[in-house]
Structures are given as structure tokens and as C-alpha cells.
Length: 401
Ligand code: DI6
Ligand code: FE
Image (cartoon, rainbow, N blue to C red):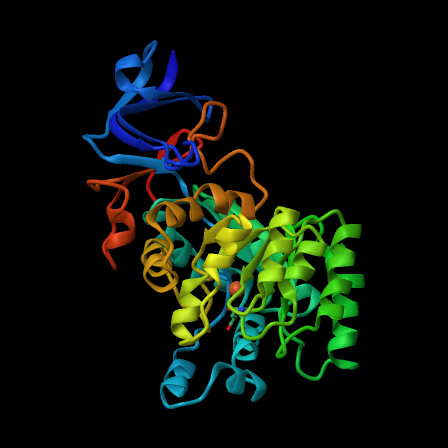
């Protein structure tokens, strides 16, 4: 006896062998009991009965999609900077002139937690409508102890009030607050000694921006040491605009992931693979910043590195509100295969968050499903725009965003 069973579906379990990793099952069914997948396979083999049966009418079922890198809690927007960039200013010039991340920091500090929540909610609901069932949300636009904690509380509240899994990441080391006494060194120390210990109950991981306009590898290492003391795993915005050795640094700390990686060296990528870190690819940022340099996907494949794909949803470098669009851009811009792109928003995205209970359709795991009215999985990568998601299921419960 199951709680619920979804029938007349085709399945992409993401649990296949290396030569057919999507694990396709035609004429399949999925059964849930107590929030978990209780059975999965060909419908003809379905055992037992269910309290409720949902006929999927030939739709495709995938693991609920996972957006593993977002900054979707923030105040204001940066549409005016978008216009400045169209007129010729670069992202780094705007940042150095006190705009960029800092303009969002001002707007975020000025907003109440209720206002941040109200602004973030529809952004998250847009992702959910596309079949996203788990999302990571970073802080990083407060840059003071109180405002970083406020951002994390808003992220947690989104997860508590909407049917979606939320994983929070402390990104207090996102930028050096203007006028901070002692500059980047002193602020990195403040993050390490004060903010990380205070955030330990609100954050699931710690991230940093290792870049010329942000933190050096040594300052990043200080932050990572503090994360280790607090028992929190780390992630890194690495080698996005230049190669500071961020990939190798992340590997040295056993990071869950290193993200962006446009300028990462093959050596750094191999170190990540050996450490079991996931490479998170963010084509929205490459596209919006018109970065000529692409992540070295060939070197990632050669190193056996797992690749995830995410929106990086943020008000500056990647105002991307669609994970499905990122699937297309990962294929079109970075030349990922359809299989790689789809694994990148399911099982490898789960790995980038350290989550072992989702990302794959397998008995015993959380019953998070995304159901799509498509003829084949490649259609999910093929369209730019449109939303074929017909149902989403979170921990065995049907849910609308
Ligand atoms: N890299 C990014 O792409 C975002 N943060 C980061 O470190 C951009 C954040 C922003 O521009 O607001
Ligand atoms: Fe980011």
C-alpha cells in the first residue's frame, strides 16, 4: 500500500549506468510512501495499490530540479547598471566605483526582513514553477554581522513557508564593506572570528568570493579555517574573472563545490576532482558579462569532474530567473551534452550541496519530482523560454508553487 502513485509516465531517473546516465524508463511509474520514493520501475511491474493514483498522461518525470547557487535574497535591483554596461562600463569598473555589489548592499541593509522576504518570494516561486524543489540561497549583501544573519533568516523563512527545500550559505566574504577599518584583511578576520561563529545555526555552508575585486587566496583560507572550526562545509566563487588558484584552494579545503571557474587551470580542476568537489557552471553570468572566456569543459571531463548547472540568480552578473533557460545556455554556450546538463540540475547539483537524499529517483530517497510535458528529455534543454512543467512533488506531496 502506497500513499500515492504516479502512472503513465516516462522516467529519467538519473540513476543509469555510465553509458546511459539518464536511466530512462518508458511506461514507468513512481510510488511514494511517507514522503519517500517507495517503488520505481515499469508500470507493468507496479506492485500493490495506492490511496491516490495520478495519471501523468505520458509526461516525463525527473528528480525535482535543484538550483544549487543563488543569491535570490536582496534589496533593489541593478537595471540602471545594466544600462551603464550597455553604454560601455565594465562590471569591474562599476564595482571599483562603489556600485555593483555595494549598491545591492545598500539596498539590502535598508530593507526590513519582511521587505526582503516579499521581494525574494516571487523569484523563488518562479523557479519552483519550473520544477525546482530544492534551492540554495546565499547571504552576502549585508556584510555586517546583523545584516548577514538577517539575510539567512529570510532564506530560512522562505523554506519554512513555501513547499521547497532551502539550503543556506553564508557569503559574508562576498566583498569588503567600503570604509571597513583595516580593509580586506581586517574584514576577513571579522568574518572568520565573529560572523561565522554567529551564523553557525543559520547557515548550512560557507562561501567566499576569491577575486581581485574581493578576497585574496590567503584571506579566503582564513575564512575557510573558521568554517572548519564551526563544522561547516565550504564552497567558493573561484576563478570567475581571473585565475587566482581558486579551484586548487577549494580542493585543499575539501569544498563541496567551486563555482564559475571560467579562468581555472587544468591543474586546479584536477585537484577538485581528486577532492570530490563539484564544478558549478553558471552560464547566466558568462552571458550577461559577455565573458569571452568559457569554463574549460574538456578539461573538466578529462579530470572526471562532476559538473552542476545553476542560475547564480543575483541582481548584477546574472539576473537569471529560469533554471530551464540555464540548461539551454549550458549546452549552447558551454557545449554540455543534454545528459550533462540534466545531471547538472539534479544529481550533481545535489552533490554540490552535500545532499545525499535527493537528485536521483531511487527507492528510499525523498520523493521530490518534477513532471514535464515534453516528448523527450532533450526538449528541456532545447527551448529558450516557455515552461513545460506540469506538476511538482515535494516529499511525496503534490504542490503548486
Ligand atoms: N560572483 C557573482 O557572479 C555574483 N557574486 C559573485 O561573487 C555577483 C553578485 C553581484 O554582482 O551582485
Ligand atoms: Fe554567485
